[in-house]
Amino acid sequence: MSIREGRAVEGDLSLDADVVVVGSGAGGAVVAAELAEAGQDVLILEEGPHVPPERYGKMRPSQNMRHLWRDGGLTFAVGLGDTPVINVMMGQCVGGSSVLTGGVCFRIPESVMHVWGREHGLTDIDPARMEPVFQEVERRIHVEEVPAELRSRSTRHFLNGLDSLGMPWAPMRRNTKGCNGCGRCNFGCPHGAKLSVDVSYLPRAFAAGARLVSDCRIERVTSKNGRASGVEGRLLSAGTRKPRGRLGVRARRVVVAAGAYASPLLLADSGIGRRSGQVGRNLTVHPGFRVMARFKDPVEGWKGALQSAYSDALESDRITLTSLFIPPGALAGTLPGIGLAHQRIAQSIPNLAIFGGMIHDEGGGRIHRLFGRPLMTYRMAPEDRAAIPVLMRKMAEVFFAGGAEEVFLPVLGLGGVDRDRLRRVDLEHVPAASLESASQHPLGTCRMGVAAQSSVVDPFGQAWELPELYVADGSILPTSLGVNPQLSIMSMALRIAWHLREKKLPS
Picture 1: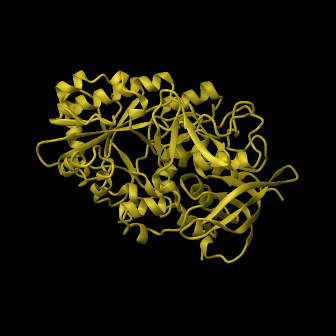
Picture 2: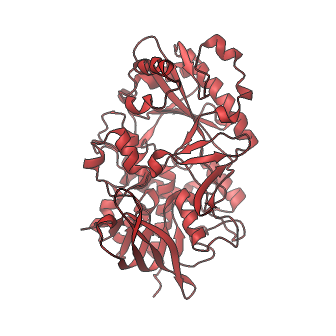
Picture 3: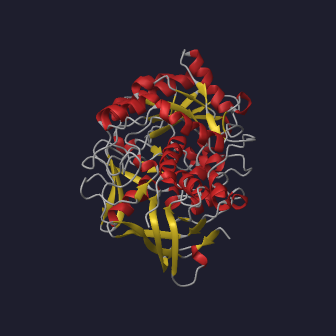
């Protein structure tokens, strides 16, 4: 059996491998598959449970969040200064957040790669060198353009507004094959049409001999003779997720791919990063803001791909607009109002359209421990904070241009606004505590660079302070991207995997 559930292991567990990979998401699965196919003995460790597609595809959204999301989807970045609290949602299961994304696949923007080269010295990461990497990942996960017939009426209403205002838009590209537009992408595709890593890269790794242990929390990277030599942690019980037996792994090489939230915590707990002081810092999240609109006629926005189109019309304002819609049961729990006010809005769900806007942020976040517990804080750069009212006002104008009767902005207590009231709302002075913000894109907390004084890992992901320890997930990205990061993370991980495939394992 390729997958061993830690919750079912009695007592302690001791294992050996050529390479141990901590994390089974977009970064870890790619590295594991490539190295296993190169003939290396690969062991994958995952903190979350093993929930196969045939199980998560039948779950209600509430069950899905309880079993597959970190903290049930309720992890927050505490806003510092004039910054809203941001709900940062991350997967915690075999396959990681890849199981729970909308499937959107953007390459690293060329403008971002130029910044990495100019400001961070990463001149080898350029469009020409990355082209074969992008192509290989896109082939493996079947990246395709969302066809027009899968655009929901919710999305079409917003696109009509963009067209009316002369603002450009384009179809999304996603890792899907045979999508029927059920709109459940964020809760695990029930039809196997989304090629998340649990149905693409991990099966490749298992076919090549890789093993996986789920339900285990890794607490420390071990070292011997000046290099990484394995990891130690605890097996977790079912249900309560409390630590049980001990887990020890001896390995010739360690790859940490636990994501931008957990990877810096593991490195810091292992005493890595003190020299540069950068571990856990430089967090970017793409702060997102959802805008809803009520139309006179039924919209039934859940009928169609969850994400099918986007607009970079506000790129100069550091804003990307993306389509989205979530199942009505989950949507109802996030709507504004109390009592009868909430009931009125909930009853209008069939007439609601939704679009989202996210900010290409500068990064003012940090992940660390306070009294032994993880704490994520985030302070918006002034230019990012100034983009929020621009985003809300412009998105409302687009919806009105598309025929909306009422718009609901992500401002707590504001309620619906029509055109006249929108003009009177002083969006520039809405306090941060009144803003509703969310993210699924934490990045940058173990950033890559060319100098040990200003970065955590070198240009191929190796930790400056400990040879044979590599990081291969969203935490190594030096800046935010301004677009959904799934393909970017997988491509950076593949670049590292190709390097490791050619690098001799230590004896």
